[in-house]
Length: 217
Ligand code: ATP
Image 1 (tube, rainbow, N blue to C red):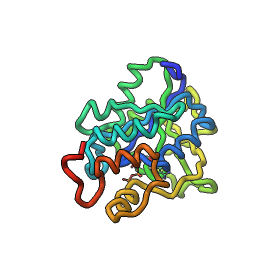
Image 2: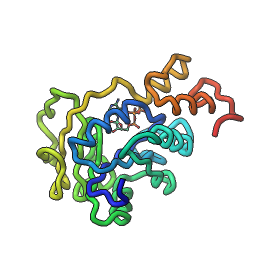
Image 3: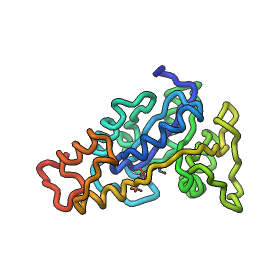
């Protein structure tokens, strides 16, 4: 991958842990959205939800393992290195300064897009990036749409900031919440995780009912 992609996707999340639903979904939109690269950015402290269950360093390790053999998906540690609340607006401004000339699109599940107007500096954010909303095939936008919603056609282009581009994916029926629950209950989650991530969780005793503190990273 070039050091300066023309069009770069930003895929943020808690990744507690990263699972095959994440990588599978993003892989499906790289080509239709005309993305040269996707930066996968684990949040240090996500502003909109509870604190993650495992240390940020471990979530980042798992993202690195999951992406090691992916083409075009790159881990980005900036929010964890920055610490404190992970505001996407700060991340976007940092990326823009670091990669002049690159266009950025925010990749989100539809539910997250519908709540965008509660994000920190959301109007400034929409002035900077296009949004790629991952939706299930056959889905139609809710009625009425929020007043700020402006639908974009096709893949985001140079004038797409503020537009919501719907991209159909076949999502995998998995969430990190379910994986954490399954692990606590001792159920097998191998089919939901990258093999290396599964091994990392096992080795460090993450998400189990009584983790061995000596093995927690
Ligand atoms: P949790 O269950 O802890 O809320 P999660 O599995 O939803 O976690 P997040 O880290 O919160 O994972 O999600 C990061 C991004 O990945 C969000 O935009 C979310 O919509 C998307 N995402 C999560 N799971 C899937 C999936 N199975 N298919 C497609 N997108 C997903």
